[in-house]
Each structure stands twice: as C-alpha cells, then as structure tokens.
Image (cartoon, rainbow, N blue to C red; front, side, top):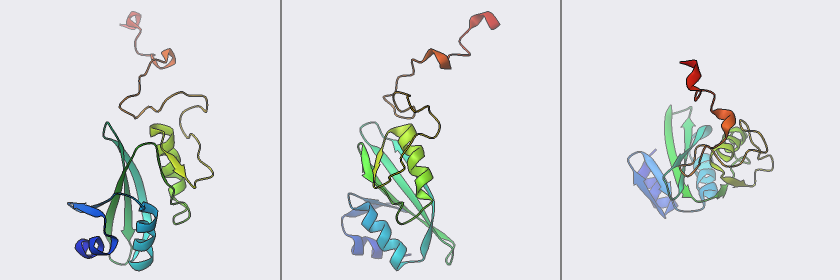
Length: 144
C-alpha cells in the first residue's frame, strides 16, 4: 500500500514512519481501508497512555500482500467501536476498556475482562494509584 496515496484520500492525517495517524472518523478510515485495499484482518488494537491522552493503534493485515498497516488515533475517554467491521475487535476493545477506561461507542458488550466488575480505576493508566492492599502480597518483610 502506498501510504502517501492513502493520506491523499483520507485527508486529515499524518504519517509517522509506517503509522497513519488520523485526527477523527477512525471508523470511516478503517472501513475505507478494509473495503478498498486487501486489509481484511485485524491483528490487534493496542493502547498507549501518553499522559494527557490515550493513543489507540489498529494493526490491519493483508493476507494477499502479507503486509501490515498501522492506523492510530489519540483519544481522551471514548472512541468509535469497530466491532461491526471486525468481530475480533470485541476482545481488544474490552481489554482496553478494562485497563485504560476507554468507552467504545457502539460496542454493546463492553465489560471488564481481568479486573472484578466492582474494581475502581484502570490499572494501565499513568494516573492510576494502586492502593488496594489485596495486591500487596510481596510487601510482608517477615518472609525474608
């Protein structure tokens, strides 16, 4: 895929190496790439806490060309779900919700995967404070 060609079609985005960074309408961009190129598989969605925002990175794969394309968007607390485009996105969106607190608009089955339903906070956010004594199993100095 020619990333510069895609940038010309998508418009409001920039290239960072091999990653296409969009400012908004990520769902539309992913749908366009899926329908007009051979990227028919979602490998993963990854989240990175940048401090003031969360970057979501979508790794699409073309079985025909055996190549990946990375699409990213920076969000605050919510993002568009892509489960209608890729059923496999459901698991990644649930994990990102559980660990980072991102609400995926359109994912009707958003739930915690690892943390208990009553858990407060999102453990992979930089502003998360771990003060739950149930997790302090290694803090006992008597075991030395």
